[in-house]
Image (cartoon, rainbow, N blue to C red; front, side):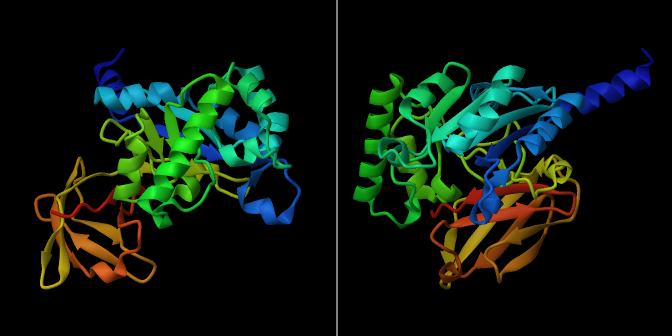
Length: 314
């Protein structure tokens, strides 16, 4: 092999990333479910694109192990996750994944399964699925956890954990936030139950600098541009604990492995700003009243790098 080609391949491998995709409904004809639905044929196209383009299909457990190792990704990986445990997953997507022997993780909305809701799987079906993939928790009542009191959050998580364990015969290792909504208090409470990892729907790719308790996932439907989604890259941002100055939060941080002079910061729908980098570092002031209950900042770049970070106060 020519030296230049060998070096090129090595550089590509060193900067490989992982992608976690999130799906919900499959072949659902109802218009109100369009935003979360994908046809079986489109789902097959997604899987074919990944395998044809050299992506290694990995289970979530492998992703978590990779991130915990802190070793750079040496190959492109993709992971399939499905939220809620709708019956359409069991009827349409599960047979595809089973036939192709593609790993996956199903996150279970416990109250819906326990209550026998019409559109959802049964516990027997979930136990069958668990023979071929991984299963995790998606809360008990599927509500916005950031609006719950500490007592309500404790009860929701404990109830879902206990019912899940009793009905499946296994303790859940992974958790997916309902609606992808969380803040520092929610994250701390969910972590206290001993989960190995928590996943979000914060857009972005996964690398060795990701946080296993806020792993990025790309939510997909039949209307989304899959090739554009697979072009998203991780942005390595380190935030210091926020301090207060004249009633404003002082946000300081630094960006790693990035040679441009600026990045974008999304505070809320009305506050989108450009941050200038000085030796890879930045500083900005934010009115705390303008930050929603998630207390989360989203950083991005022109070349489609993303990372969401929770604010910690000093």
